[in-house]
Length: 341
Ligand code: NAD
Ligand code: WQD
Image 1 (tube, helix red, strand yellow):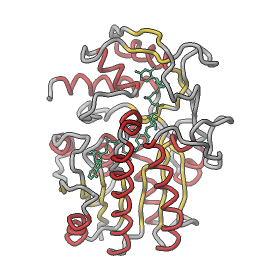
Image 2 (image 1 turned 135 degrees about the horizontal axis):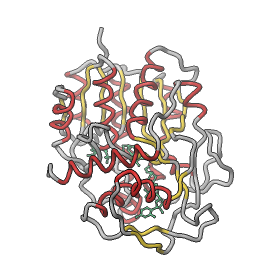
Image 3 (image 1 turned 60 degrees about the vertical axis):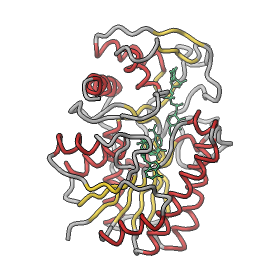
Image 4 (image 1 turned 60 degrees about the horizontal axis):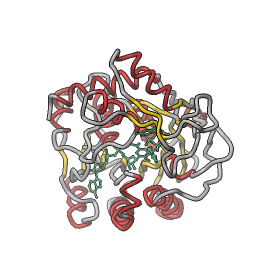
């Protein structure tokens, strides 16, 4: 029998690309829950345009347990990918209560529904931000977590901790995927990030600036102890991230996991500087980009990148896209989005 997957946050950046990859690569039925808190209702039209497939989305707040139960009454769900959360670092500093309420109560309701409806497979979106400031690079899953830098990261850290006890007690096979820096867009150029908030992450800032929506890019810090003085991060293409979710879900369905709760890093393993990202953008697009060297941004670490060996060993996941393709797809999407508002 066909399996049915519930994707929470299916209208969002990573959720929508994952739905598209699920359509392309599996025969799973897909249901979404998203209240468009930080996304556009056009997402599902875009998915249909690319794939021909109509996705059922329940426009409900995951904190509303009674409404959420209806989704589970209507569909026999085999596995859940729980993406839905608020994710802006500066916004979480400004409104911590909102972040704790939204992210943790949504997650608790998903956990509750797993128990009520006997769902045994769960993938949780975690983040490299749970590592905080690390001393030794690259970061693997055994790297000790240091103090988190913001309420957003704290919700992910608490979220993981809740899952440890709960997965073992409730016997729900659970994987927390810790993404490093997801970027880029679907290679079709027809689907990517379309948030309600003004972007603050590097790649949408670069493409937004190049297209004329945003001021010149500020490179936050040029005096870090790195090869060119700017910060180093582990950028990973969003379609590779989506692919890892599908692999993780199938891994659970095939009962290959030895632990009820496990954690897996998703990164390429390569650190790239801010200036290298900018130069890649200019090279692959041929566009002019104004940028200035600016002060360091509070809360930034000089460098962080992953050791992705565990994802390869357990899931056979190896990222396919390089930095130039990340920039190329992000730019293609930015151009499309300008005319699709
Ligand atoms: P996104 O904001 O694009 O998508 C999240 C979606 O969840 C949005 O469509 C939003 O409307 C929905 N949502 C939020 N709260 C909801 C609620 N209470 N009820 C129903 N829907 C709700 O974010 P994204 O980039 O796709 O991130 C997906 C997940 O991955 C998040 O959990 C995020 O914290 C995590 N993550 C993202 C990144 C990144 O850089 N994008 C990195 C690491 C981890
Ligand atoms: C990347 C680099 C900036 C904007 C965040 C979250 C993390 C995860 C991924 C969710 C940094 C520099 C940026 C700009 C710049 N998300 N930069 N000028 O901070 O590494 O990680 O997103 O879980 O939790 O913290 O990502 O894209 O904001 O920054 O120079 O205008 O680009 O200083 O070095 P970050 P980012």
